[in-house]
Image: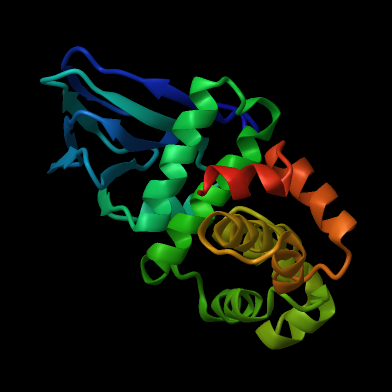
Length: 242
């Protein structure tokens, strides 16, 4: 699978499959029904609030006893190397479960389209937030990542971040991409967009207030960036979260 070839779709499983593996990561996220799975000799159930993370090269088999529906993401390992460090079965937080519901709606309406990459990166960011300790990179990258997590609402330069990590800007970019599958600038943008989506869908803050809380003083600039990222205006998420 090429580096930029991501897929995000709805799948139903009507049979059992013998053990096999892929050269890409796969996320199986529950919508309805259950899927019995074994991933690298670890057995579990995908359903209700539990999902499965199948790392590239890991053997897995499944059995689907009943009618079911899942959001399935196929992700090149180069884009998200940290997924290999996650457990095979994970509990979904309310925020993750809500986002899976949103993805389900978008796929039903065939609206994921050009924004698939952004939607998947936000999903990966939410997983990172829930399971950060399991996927923590080396301490220099961890320091840079922690700073971005705590100061995403402020202007952050690559030189400033490199000093915090005690690396050259070029070395920081290289190690950050190797550890997290994106540059520091991309991570900062994803963090801002993730926080904006959560605030829009879960709070009563105005769109202007949300923009300010994620580092945008100009509402028009925030709205344009948000629309490019999700293929929807901020007001769409405000309505869908109510």
